[in-house]
Length: 385
Ligand SMILES: Nc1ncnc2c1ncn2[C@@H]1O[C@H](COP(=O)(O)OP(=O)(O)OP(=O)(O)O)[C@@H](O)[C@H]1O
Image (spheres, rainbow, N blue to C red):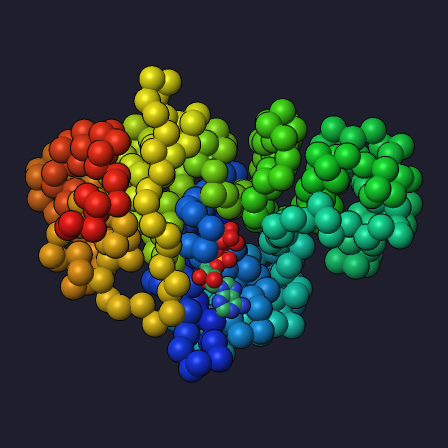
């Protein structure tokens, strides 16, 4: 069952010179209950912007330009005794709640979304482990989070839950009385994950949860996330530039570039039947994804600035396969299975389909073969196109 549906979401930042940064441009994806969904791409492609926009935590100059974020849940005051959206709320044209009970988070006010943050959706921001307060005991910070969002809980119950949560993420419950500086980097990250789970949210957003940790600790954090998911049935939206981390933990993912989704689908399809030049390039540059006998090759050039971008494909200046069409308009999402079986391009809006925004997916075999050749990714080759 779908927990989150992001439809055509465009987010911009207003900047001093009067232009705007198109950080997310008509993005579509959906997250099922109990699923781990990944947003992957190089730094600056809009992953963090998207995540923050879902819970209205954008920087002051950021705003949702258009689109919807349908979430299977609603404000506590809009629910009936079974926890479903009241019919009177659904019928009220001033309330952004659909017939199926889903609420458009994008249409809520900041104070309304505050009632859903933590309880329904918790976000672990980038570098979250540095956000633990140094002057409070770690356990007390979890207790405070519980009491703030569930005032009916007693202090003793909250303490018990905090200890239990720490234990679930592999930290001795007695360490609840320690301060953050007494924790290692990996422990701090796990404590932040425990805190995010304090109110049993339906969706946990984890922005670069393993960056800045060494490889062994990274693996443990990923295991903890998987364990929590099994125990609580929470859906996880995970964000990372590291496609190998994503390969390990995600059920499905969207590969982003320049504020656009370039390819999306099930993890095995993204890696097993890669269908976009950007994903092919990204795969080449990560050691654990690349075949053992293949050299690592990075994509030459840098991502675009996204200030009032022209309408062409966002990736075309770095794409070795760009053709004239790519300069005119960014490609729509095409259904990969259909292109592979019929050789024809068929647009898709189905977020469950394996989709790719590329005009050349009817020549996938050739693209995949060429992408393995290091010479394909030289600057001269790309500039000559
Ligand atoms: N407050 C802001 N004002 C203007 N532009 C911004 C602002 N915040 C982010 N951007 C721009 O928006 C684009 C997307 O940035 P975002 O941080 O969402 O990307 P990201 O993929 O999460 O990268 P990273 O992993 O480095 O955070 C980038 O071009 C970035 O420079």
